[in-house]
Amino acid sequence: VVGADTMLEALNATEFAAASSDAPIELNLGRPRDPSWPGALPPAVGFKLIDNLPVDVARHLSDEGQKLARQFSGPMGPPQSLMNQKVITASSEDVSVEIPMRMIFACTNLGLIPNFAAPMDVPRHLRISGLGRWVRLDAAFGSVYHSNRLSLF
Image 1: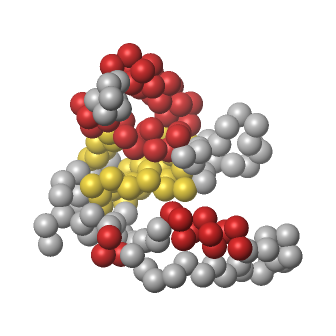
Image 2: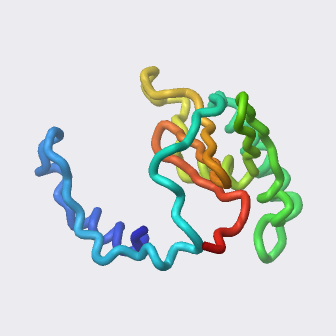
């Protein structure tokens, strides 16, 4: 976990043009801020793939959710009931997870899913995975995690 301001400063200070495309880029992100994370971090391994969700479905859900958010938002932003609403349930033989609207909004608003101009080799689906209390959506350009209950340990 790092601060967004620290990440931005590190990215601005890095000479991307001078770096070879084969060489890794090292960023000075300062001290880790893991204690600032609210609760336990998601596990690094062990997630089980449950299903694939087409990007078009995620975009449609986001568009419909944004219409509702504009209609019902107040001074505090969109209602929590909209953000927490379960919009997708995915199941496999032994795992079932629910995807809240906040995860769909995160994928679309952060630009994690490809737009229509993206090359055809970019995945056009979201991978839905689960592990215990955690749900993970893997998109083409990043992942979103959600815990379905608080971490007390």
